Length: 116
Length: 109
Image 1 (tube, rainbow over the protein chains, first blue to last red):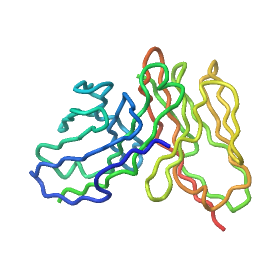
Image 2: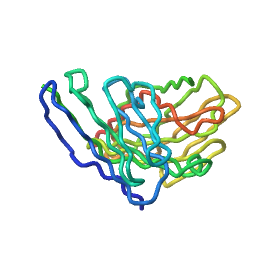
Image 3: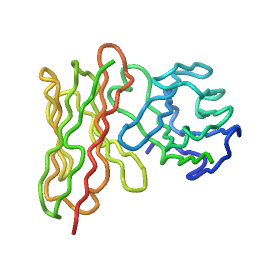
Image 4: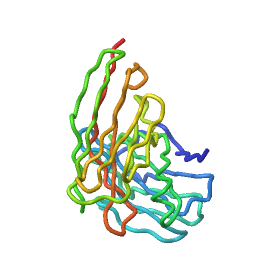
């Protein structure tokens, strides 16, 4: 089974701190994604990457950046955390191209970030 | 982009009851998935179902792509079915799905 591992389950940070959320997948997936989940809003795509060093903005990229230096690792960076970034962050991965459609996504277990 | 509406938003069942969850799309979808998020936050892919019907144990799903909807059936519900159910789909050449807001299911013993 594909495993997508997120580095922290719970995280508490102060306003203005730099925050880095790490995601690692072990099945050589081409695509990786970062979502945030808020009550009543479902999952909203922040950024995704379809290859090493490649990144694309999702629906809500403001206030975030990403890094993908290796195929298995996709990092989400909050340069200066704010209270409105308190949320559940979910990482996902999938195969590339048409195979992504056939096999769908695998999600990590999430990081619940609180910014105080 | 594509709009995804899920209904009902909330559902409370007694153990053993059956239920149907619905997902409507604003456009034709070519990449439709159903997910279950357990109370601890883990999202599990239940079905990849761009069209037709699939079954997995007590769960089954049907997608009618031409009419832009998908249904998830849960039969003989159990307390472990509790959580949030999401559908997600994409249209055109995109493989990036848009998620609905979810149906929150509580199954009481």
